[in-house]
Length: 121
Image 1 (cartoon, one colour):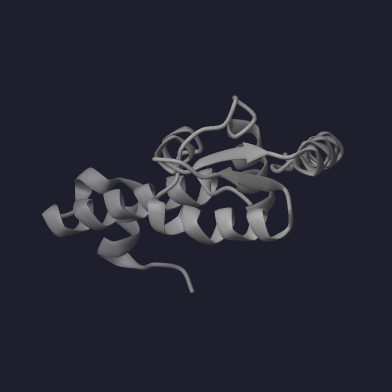
Image 2 (tube, rainbow, N blue to C red):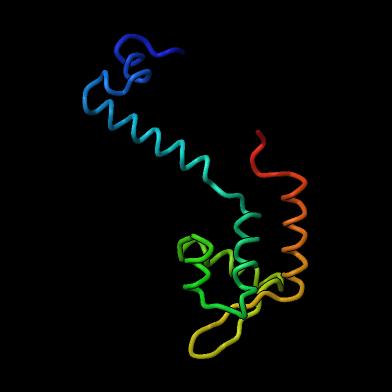
């Protein structure tokens, strides 16, 4: 179903409508950008494994360097530790390190990314 009348003019030219239409159009644009920038689970796992190769880092550094939230990082870290791809070094602060199995997994993820890019143009 195609938009008709005022709605069609506003989608074609957001400045043609009232303020609420412009707000909705800007919200729509932000949503579209967010969808384009969304990463796959494999991409997130690869970033975490890559970040943890740097002589071990804390959870805070993993979150900031892999560009994710703490809430999002927890299940990924638990998964990677459970599968033996990451190890923890206990101490005052828990340090995360990529294991040799994790390095092999990272190489495999990079190889797949070269063969099948995330974006198909």
